[in-house]
Image 1: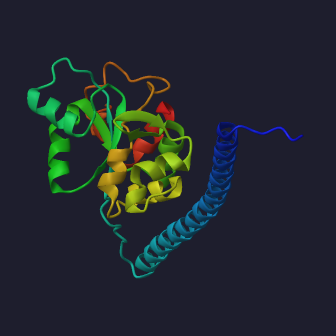
Image 2: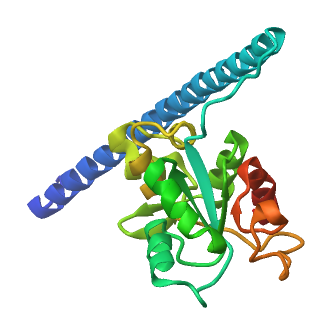
Length: 241
């Protein structure tokens, strides 16, 4: 005589089977999405690499052409700056403190990217005694994001350990991987503001060898550390990462 299985047990078994099937389907879809995202990220990186190379080749060609004609090639003004705070809060004027808050430089050795225009340049001149800034190379932007990059998700500081963090934060504007994020920041693209706001201010270490107490308050052009140091910012970041 067959044992009659209670109705409640049958319902439970059916529910569990349905949940297991849904979990299996979700796992399969997640694997497929991850595989596709990886392909897209590689394709984006290759596309941007070709774009960077074409830009560099064009700059070299223009320099050679200008030299051949007996002139000088003047490159375009930089659109991106990296600002590093090198002084604490003591003796900072209220106006300078407010500007540093706008640039999100709340702690010493904090660093952020800034789009250069007339207003930001004016603000930078007001806080020059407390910060050093310059024009980062693509390599410096990559190192900062890969080594010290943290994203802002739900007002929390989340390490960028996976492209899914970037997609969740700024995927709505078409930035889905590290290559997209680096390209948007370095080229100061149309979604620079969203990409930069997604990045938490970089927390850098004290530079290897340290700052000199005698020259820390002096402008870089006078042998000090503060103010605009142009492309020399890349050497400083290398010492601070």
